[in-house]
Image 1 (cartoon, rainbow, N blue to C red):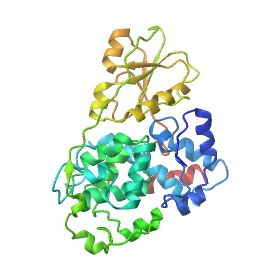
Image 2 (cartoon, rainbow, N blue to C red):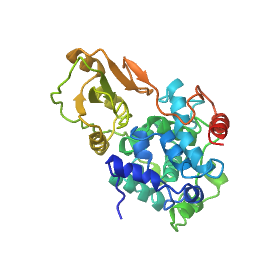
Image 3 (cartoon, helix red, strand yellow):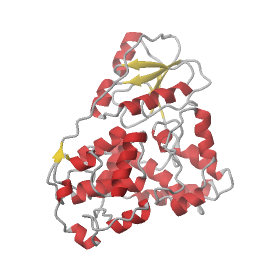
Image 4 (tube, rainbow, N blue to C red):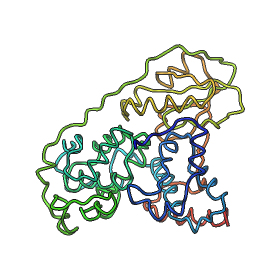
Length: 367
């Protein structure tokens, strides 16, 4: 059965109602576990982490009994807080070492590493724009720690294909695996991958102890490398109709919230900036996904061009947008996003320090 992501808002809300946070906590590490598949909608700003958490708690769960589920939502907020103060295209804490190349193994691009759990996950990524979180870590570990490729280009490759591509979560996670955002590299051996991907392989280049993996040479399977060369396929520009007398609400790759300023009259523009997607390229499937999601917003129009050209061409003054670290050059009224703990701000070098602050707020708010 192929994994598909619906794009109508009613179905998305139903998916929130179907979450089983207890089963999620018990099984989320397995590829067939009770994960929510809500990440594409959270990343695209259709729904928020706070919205999901409040919906689940409203059904009678206590935050303490579903801590694993709550933490995963908070990881997303944490990465966004890091992105507000750090350039995530650079190492957050220290350089990745050792690095033998700044490319990506051909075996990864072709999904032919010989590790079935990883190859199957790459095939799903190409087909459906999704990869299980543990498989993302397995893939990053093989690329960076076994293949010794620098994390940045492989991270761009994965982001390019993910419907839930969030540069903050993606870059921070790749750096965490590679030891650039953590005190220790992350490794997964064949035994662990077999367990969580329900595979039964032996005698692979990962079929070793963790101690042996940490000192192993790059295997022949990962020796061939190449540059990741993404294709960028933007929609064609079209004429839009604007009323300069009413507010303009700017939607983009990270904000497609149908409820945002819903009751107010205004121009509603999905802004697709070619320069942004040149810096952070995504697949045509990802672009098609946001175009489909945007249909949940009545009267929205698509503008292909820069923020500045939109403002200049249509003489706009009263502009609203939602805060995001990648909104480069935006001007106007900046609305906050819906954080689980809106007052826990700034950079925390550890998620668990951040979580300690958030947990206190949750215990007071949802006691």
